[in-house]
Image (cartoon, rainbow, N blue to C red; front, side, top):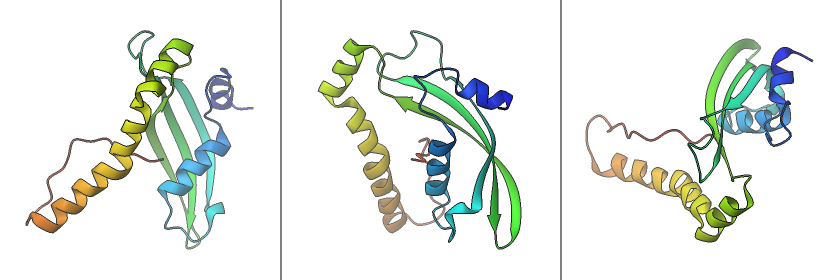
Length: 138
């Protein structure tokens, strides 16, 4: 087991593992004809913020290095991203799910942002306005 695998699996509360990362990367590279064209080289997972800074979610910082084979050419990429999870604390989890904060955020990234981008491309001429919104990978 490599150092990054040890670090990434040190907490049972962190669902980030190689299988999960492959699913995220396959979705990110969904234009690839062959899903086995992605292999994980290594990855690290660590807390994404200090304890007590986030009440409505548990935040993880993930860095993954992976190999992508496309048209017989292999390239190595690195991707850094944030994973937001429901809070582990039962009271906070109840509060978030009862108020549907989690579903609202998911809807924002999967429906509202694409609608804004479509609207912009159809109604605004010239260079698109870069919206200061993080990319949602999965």
